[in-house]
Image 1: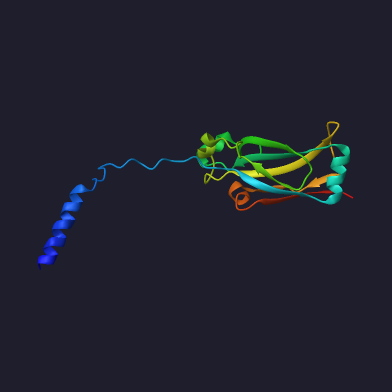
Image 2 (image 1 turned 180 degrees about the vertical axis):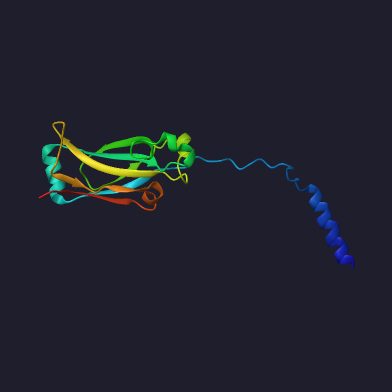
Length: 161
């Protein structure tokens, strides 16, 4: 019995030394969502050689958009979506990972889309003397940004025969 009383007294003493929890704890700080992702860019040997010979670089374009909430239906584009900005990156025609920042997503407008889950359409092209190189064919990706973030997104380019 004396043992229990001693343990109880020790616990009561220690509890007096512990800091008291705040009556109204501060809310957890909200961190901005990160919409960046990576593309695993690859070229067939023929496509890479074609671009190197012509001195062309690859332009990757990521167009961001979202499906409107009922309250934001008046903000839709002619395509029926809420449009954001487009990110563009120009890279050498080499097999490489390309980091896309997702900076084209205007975070203040996310409240206007369902989820709020932004979508992205990624296309790529090369210009030769200001004209699109029609011999180059690159994958088109169109899905949620969250899908692109799962792992480096395979993105390949080849030559049209």
